[in-house]
Length: 638
Image (cartoon, rainbow, N blue to C red; front, side, top):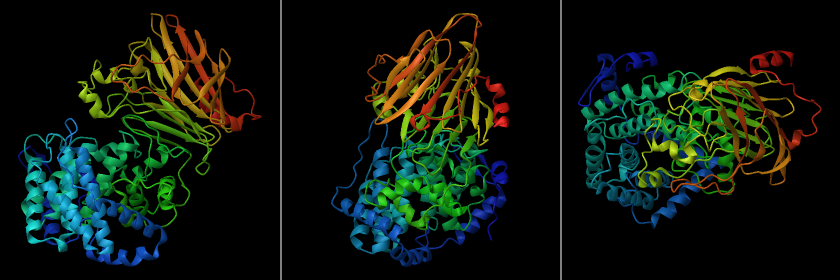
C-alpha cells in the first residue's frame, strides 16, 4: 500500500526544489513509485472502466443527470461541424484557444464515452491533431500550456481504445514536448505560488504525467513530486475558513484544477497523498455558497465577475463530505440548464456527470452570518437562505496587494427585495488594457493598475479621502464579528489602508432583525483638513427627500437611505467620472453618495441606514447611534 503523507508532512517534508530537479523525501518518492506501478489501465483520469460501466447504467435512469448528458451531447453535436482550433494569440495569451480545445475535447469525449458513437471520438481526435501541430502552446504564459495539456491528457486517456498507434504517438509526443518538458525549462515561477497559477499549472502537468505514466515513468514521478511539493503553497491560503483570496470566479478556476488534481491522483494512483485533508480545504467547498447573494450573483470583489454558470467542483465537495446544502444556491443555476432556460454550462459541465449524484441539494445548514479570515477577510450577513428577496450584505477587508486585488478595502454589496442595490463591477478584459500599454500586474503604489477606474477606490463602495487611492501595502483586518441572530455584525479596521490621510478608519456593517442594514464609519483625521467621499455604485435612481435622506428606485422596488453624519455636501447622485481611454463607462450604473469635510484631528461617526421597501413598515423604531465598540452590548441586549 502506498505511503500516504499527511498535510503536515507534505508541508514540511520532501522537496528541495530547483528549476533543474526535485529531490523528494525517500518515503514519498517510494510511495509515488509504488502507486505508479499499480496504476490501472485507461481510462484512469477521474474515472476508471468500472466507474464508467456503473455510470452508463445509472445515468439513463436518472432524469437530472440524463438531462445534463443530453445538453453535453447537443453541444458536442454543434462541435462536429466546426473547424479545428487555430493558434491565434490574443496579446500575450493563447489561453482562450487552450480553453476552447479543452472544452471541445471534454464535451466530445464525454459524448463518446456515453453514446459510444465514434463520430464524437473522431472529432475530438481531429481537434487534438490540429493543436498538436501548433509550434508550441505558448510556454511564456504557462496557464495556456497547462489547460492544453489537460485537454490532451483527457483525450488520450478517455479515447485510448479508439486511438490509432499513430495518434497515440502523436499525442504522447505533444504532451511531453509541448507540455511536460517546457514546465522544467527556465524558471517555473508558478510551481510554488500561492494563487490559481499554482493550482492550474501543477494540475495540468499532473494530468499529463498521469496519462503517460507507463510510457514516461521517470518524468511522471518528477511531475507528481513537484505537484505534491507545490500545491500546498496554494492550498495554505484556504486556511482557516476556506476563503479564496482571489474571489469566487477565481475560486472556480483554481479550486476546480485543485479538485481535478486530487481526483486524478485518487483514480489513477489510489491516493491523493493527503491533499484533500489540508486545513481549510474541506471548508472552501462552501465558499461559493457564502459569496452568492439571493439574486444568484456573487460578491464580485477583486477581478471577479458576477456569475453565469454552476460550479461542478462544488458538487465534488458536497459529495465527498456529504453536505449537499453547500450546492443549494449553485443548483439554481444548474436548474436553469435542466429546464432549458439557459444553454450555458461552462467548459467543465461534463464533470457534473461524475461528481453529482442527481439529488436535489438540501437547505444549507451553515450560519446566516459568516466570516472568512486570511489575506482578504470577508464578512457576510443574510436574513435567509431560502428567499430570493432576502437581505444580503457582504463586506471586504484585506489589502489591494493580493493577487487580482483592487482598491476595494471596505467595499460592500447589498441586496434586498430581489435587487442588488450596491454593485461591484469588473472592468475591461486584461488583453484590452495590456494592449494600451498599461502595466496592469504591478502592485506598486504608483502602478498603472490604480489609474484604471474600476481598479481604484473611486469605483468601489468604500471611502475616498482627498481624492487619493488606498495604501496598496496596507491591511484591514476583521477585528470584531458576531453571528448573533438578533444583531449580526462585522467590524474592519481600515486604518493602515488610509494611513497617509487618516489617523483612524473603522468600517462596520450590521443586519437588524427587521431587515435594515447599517454601514458605520468611525474616522479620526490627521493634522491637516481632509475631504472624505462616501459612495456606492448602483443601478437605482436616487430620489432625494432631504439633505441626508433619499429613496433608491430600481424596477418597482425601493430602498431608503438615511445618513447621520456632518455632511459638507448633501446626499446626491455624483457627477459622472471623467473617463480615460482605458476605462469602461458604467452604462446603467451611477454613483450615489455624499462628502464630509474633516477639520484637523476631528473625530467623526458616519452612519448610513438602508431600509428595504419590505421593511418600511417596521415597528422597531429609531436605531440609537452608538460606537462599534458597544455593538457587542447591543447583541447581548437583543
